Image 1 (tube, rainbow, N blue to C red):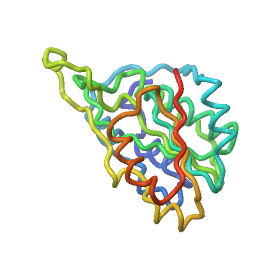
Image 2: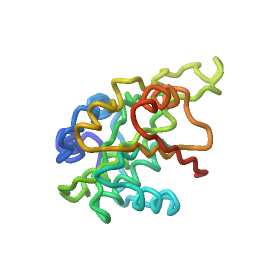
Image 3: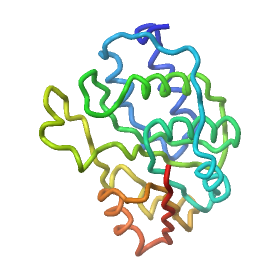
Length: 209
């Protein structure tokens, strides 16, 4: 099966289904960019594993009153999204604004493979439990100019509009936000935490993956 054989609109609709009030945070950018991506053979078998410690933390803490945000690598959140949806009926809000490009600094064929295969195999879930997933590797502060040679700089950061504000969360009945991320919090996510923690309880859980 090749990329050009995939109905990307179908994959997009599957990921977006049943997101309710959080539909606006699901980005079409990855799917639109794949329409012009170089054709290649997709893997038919897709190994879907995630860090058990991360999975346990999300399952134990995610509730209709606690809004959960996970900021880990793209592959990790794609696998986590699939397992949470299919095995725990926790609906993933895939908040990935990545422009896939053959010469892009971020976004690999493996990422594309997981995005498509995991999406095509998602079960339909209707639930009050949601988890928002953002890719930790959306940008890398350690990149140097030489790393950008012959590459498209498709890195990006998140801002206040990319994540739900406290007014929205309170209207929906949330009283707390839990953020699970890597050992070093990205600056853009820290800005969000600083912005919201005066109005709602915020817990940050750091993990090594």
